[in-house]
Length: 366
Image (cartoon, one colour):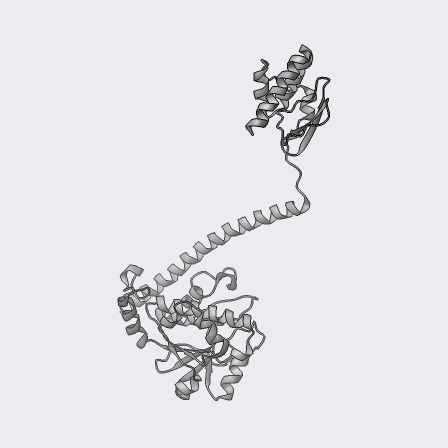
């Protein structure tokens, strides 16, 4: 504020001329050494003034000639013909401390937690690179084995493959041609009444990831959504672009869409291990999110309907340790899709399963 600044300088000159030379010099030295900034201009009774150091500490000075409040001490010292001098010990003692305040216990814990999270991020990044390296080694070994047996050499780079995913009429036509001849996979969405609202939303999110995986695949599956109704149907329609999804959507039960003899229900409780795909079969994945609350519900449902069941050969190829062995709908589909591309269960598991589910040391090649 220019008016306040001008008033302060005028009062400073008046105080310097009226006071003795020694008093004026000491006053200016104090102003210059402390670099006092006036936070607010509030005049008190004659003989005193309020001084703000920074924005938090106040210094009260008295003089027989009236109080003076400076907008900035170095400028004031220059106007009265005095040069700023080095702070005296007394002035230095009164000056605000610039040393950092000691951290509280909560702040110390927060700082330790941040440092630990930073180290974990670095470690996770390094592990991710190692996993990627090992996966490439597995794919390279399988490719060389295939070529040695006289099979067609697999493409080495994504650029060597025709683009399937993405927008555009040409990409959609290519995708439709490939998915028609793809392995039939059905998602059973008949568990709407057994799930909470939050679980329904989680399922729809998994279905979105699932469709994105199939859309980008070089060997897309012929994907069916059956028993689409209720809250699941409502949440699906809230997804932007859902009407354009290239899937077979049906409100009927899967037993009304496919012959019972062609249906194989995938469930972890089954005694039969799925070794390879049969082109004539339809593999049904239970579309349910229950956080292990409804354990075995898909197996019981398949047994009541007299359907064949099978489980993925998870334990034969990877070790999940003591962690939860429950797989989400999109993880199961991703495993199936990667197996269709590579014909290797181990590669499919390593590519589809998140790293947190794999036991340490389980990312290496066979």
